[in-house]
Image (cartoon, rainbow, N blue to C red; front, side):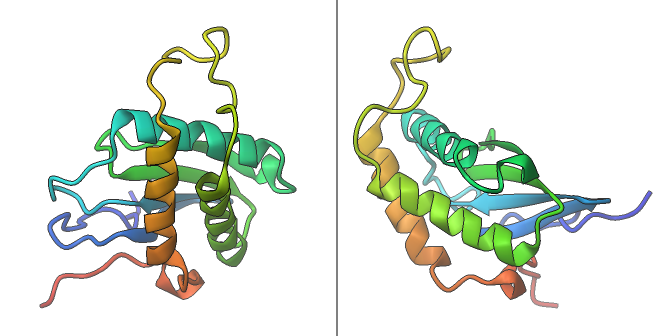
Length: 155
């Protein structure tokens, strides 16, 4: 079995950012790490949920919607996974930046958040989601395809 980039990662040193978690043929899984693992600082469920809804609406209206296979939260509440097909790292990094910019600037009704469209329509927090997106944008503002490799422990 071939090794994947996320195997053997030391979560005690993992920083906020965007990382390639694995590559399977033409599908790339990226970690969107908004919080440092095991730091005690996590996304609230309501902010995580709201970011997910706004980002998914952004995906559905984008020119790359056919290239995005999945976008969803990490169970650890430290960020999201995004799976792309046949999309370059450069485009993916910019796509993620643009998506979080969309969240940061969003006003209005949260997309697909009615009781008919959402399994937990009462647990949303738009102001908190916007603040988390703004903070993450500061982290990734200069991020490029050359920054997608996980941090390594000092030998």
